[in-house]
Image (cartoon, rainbow, N blue to C red; front, side, top):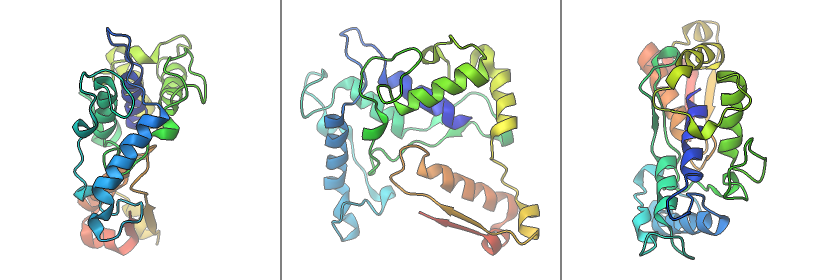
Amino acid sequence: IQSDLQFIRLSQAIYAKRPDGQSGRLPPAKTRLLYNAVLNACDARDGLKDGIVSNPDGCQFSTTTLACADGRDHKRCLSEAQQRTISESFLPTVSDFQVQNGLNFEPGFNTLRGADLTDNMGLFRHAFHPPIPILNSFYYIVGDGVLRFFLTKDKHFDALTFDTKTGGKWLPGIQQQSVEDDASLADLSPFERHGGKLLLVHGTADSIIPTEASVLLYKRIVEAMGQDAADRFLRLYL
């Protein structure tokens, strides 16, 4: 459920309306501007310039290097609103409440480390209600559907008004949905005792499910079962 809340929080940044009428959506020219700038800054740090940031943790990139001087939207630079969207995608989504298995956050995407947001932004800067596939952001489409049809049970609910920090009056529904849907159990001892093997494989440029979500799961399994037990049945490949 934390992934869905993250999608909503990011959608709110994308479609936020500033007093000057500008939104936080990044059109393809801007997502590619960011992506290429990150590659130029970090691609060769592993000794090979191949279009891949092989060491995301070693990539330190700031959007201030691409900022438009007056903060407004111009070609070949990022407006303040667009920088905020990028920041929201990179930072974790943290809630004041816990869901199944004690989780209260979802790691951010590697947006400043080689992940490309181009295919997830949608074609229009306007947030239709309900959202329209292709025209609206992928994050908005998924998050809106979960909110309207699972959490609030209100087909007219406006997902862009949802409080992802507290859950508002919908908190009991969020926690119940987490119990029913989330696969976040860390103690996999029964699975391991039955001879099960688990391979976790995650691309470092994933812009749908954060790479660090798999890293977090691995660390939680090790914490719950111990490193020796984890090594007998579990591997993580990035």
